[in-house]
Every structure is written in structure tokens, then in C-alpha cells.
Length: 170
Image 1 (cartoon, rainbow, N blue to C red):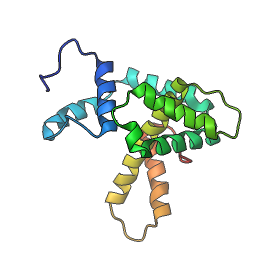
Image 2 (image 1 turned 180 degrees about the vertical axis):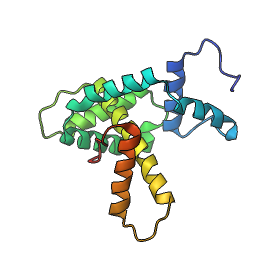
Image 3 (image 1 turned 90 degrees about the vertical axis):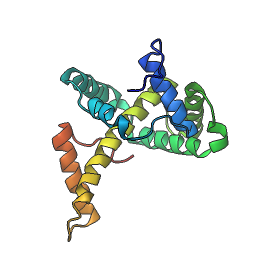
Image 4 (image 1 turned 45 degrees about the vertical axis):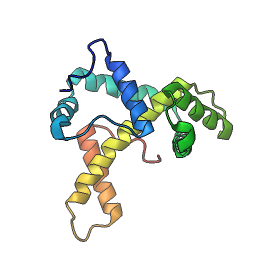
């Protein structure tokens, strides 16, 4: 447990600070002493899991085309290292919003907040799917093609998450 964190620091501030540090390449987290905390976060209680499932349903009104443009915006804005150094989260997401609206070829009036929420949904699902794929690939089964491994990873994801992987297009 890190005792250097002031008691008046809220959980939201910690998340925002960690995100800013991640984007700037600096992190105070190191060593194996953080592993027990990571394990505690991975064991979510049922109410939290239910609220996450409801959130995923609310964000499903993004089209595949919108998702693809959002991913493109995120990746292109991330490539500009000079512009992203030591910027606040709001500035960063404003740049993603500008890119999104500059390059869209469809009608959409998404707000910065809706883009942030959709990105977090895409990222969460993709990270979980990548975890399933790593589990399958680590078995190192001979005779299986990459397509076979992908199909088995999709099945594993569906078993673990009780839903199909929704963001394969991303």
C-alpha cells in the first residue's frame, strides 16, 4: 500500500492523475508490491458487474463506422508526442473530438463525453478479448491457425463475459 498518497485525494483524482502520468510516460507504480492490489481490483462484486453490463448496452448506439473513426482519432492524436506531453485530459479529448468531427463522412453530433464513454467501452472489451487471445496463444497448440485461435478466443470471451465480443471491427 502506498502511504505517500494524501488522505484528501479522491479516487477520481487518482484515476485522472494516473491517466495523465500514463499519457506523459511517467509512472510511480513499479515493483511487484502492487500485484495484490491488482488482484483485488480484478475480483469485482456482482453489482459492479451488472452496472458495467448496463453501460455497455447504453453505448451500443454507436455505429461500426463511428467506432472505426473514434479508434482512428485516438490513434492519430496519440501519435503526436509533442502535442500530448503534459496536457490535461480535457485538452487531450478535445483534440480527439476535433479529429473525429473533422474526418467524419456521416451525420453525427457526438460530444466529448460520449466519445470518452464509447472509447472506454471499446478499450475494456478489447483488453478482455486480448486476455482471452493470450490465454489461447500461450497453449502453443500445434496445427492451429491464427483464425482457429481467434475463434477459440471468441468462444472463451463469450463463456467468461456471458456476451459476444462486440468490437471485433475495432
